[in-house]
Amino acid sequence: MPDAETVVFIPAWNEERSLPGVLDELHAGVPAADVLVIDDGSTDATAAVAAAQGAIVVSFGENRGLRAGIAAGYQEAYERGYAYCQLFAPPGQELVAFEPMTAPANALVTAGPELTLLAPGDVYRAAFSITVRERDGSPGSE
Image 1 (tube, rainbow, N blue to C red):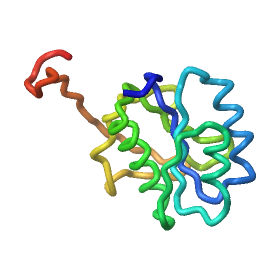
Image 2 (image 1 turned 90 degrees about the vertical axis):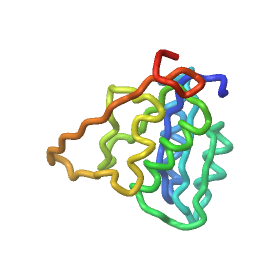
Image 3 (image 1 turned 60 degrees about the horizontal axis):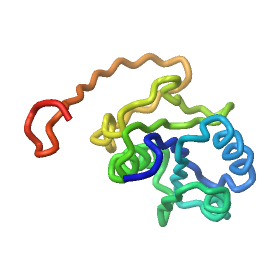
């Protein structure tokens, strides 16, 4: 289990120049959360910059695209045992960041390739459910 209850993740591709400022802002704004950078096959120093600034880094060997980066962020949060995760989109990015909601870490893990990305102004409705189980896997409360 991680020390922090929450992880904030950033999908990134070739962001070595902008990442330091974004990570500084993120660490200052949510100091109690861990930061995870999903390096989407960058050909620059994105992964090294993120690691040097204290982020957990997961790197793809090649560019897989935004959908894969988002899905990997939720998957990593779930597998690492975080109770909550938040997708972070820096200002100016065309990425909806579920603000101000913090989703349970496993809420979107199963979305995979079916994850829907929208253009600014598009409308989409979705529903999901959460099943609370005993630690042994049986229904109940945990």
